[in-house]
Image (cartoon, rainbow, N blue to C red):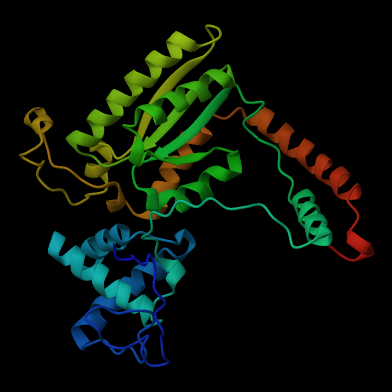
Length: 320
């Protein structure tokens, strides 16, 4: 029986990392795109500059903005071409890596520290950045769910001020995910509102309706008392938003049985500009917040932070 080696060490010389092997590996030294590609990347960079405060953007968001603002072709082939050139531009250091998110990585990290002082400095930083859960005293629990995992950082920047958690609904049709959501709602022992953002198409709307019905059924069966309830609000993307913002649409897929009763075209959430999405989400959260309670919590948070910082001396008398 021959032995199978599970891994192998690949030596890389100084000039092998950028060597042409069919696909680019590592950085692309002296990246010099052709004039046509350069024009495309100039448009992409204009979009990235326009929405700098919303980084990282997804490739789809850049694509749709280029379609609307620069007349770029709205085809899957054009989208694929854009993704290819954006990747090369990042490898060539023309576009910052952190400007675009295209990953689906899940990370499990270990909370270790180099030594005692490192731990104490960490604790002091936690104290200096102490924040209350601003939803705890609210009369309603709020969560945000989004179809596109790549958009979570943008949505989190809006929601974190309110202590509202943000989830990706890529696995929204998972029975485990639905039961966990129902359990979480029951544990809160109050009304819960799930704000959902997804594509405007038969499949997306159908899945949302199905999840809302399924989770609500679990909640009604397991809730500890009658004050616990679940409200599902699809805040984007809607037919009205597609029309109001004149977003590009495509016909519903003929292979989707749910498209038979669907009138109008379909549109992806990422066709909405990032600032518009942020405004829609902020408004949806704002109108559900008890602002008197919220301001009281902010005042209490400042007081708590001062007390906590006073109880946490820097390690060995040094600044934290």
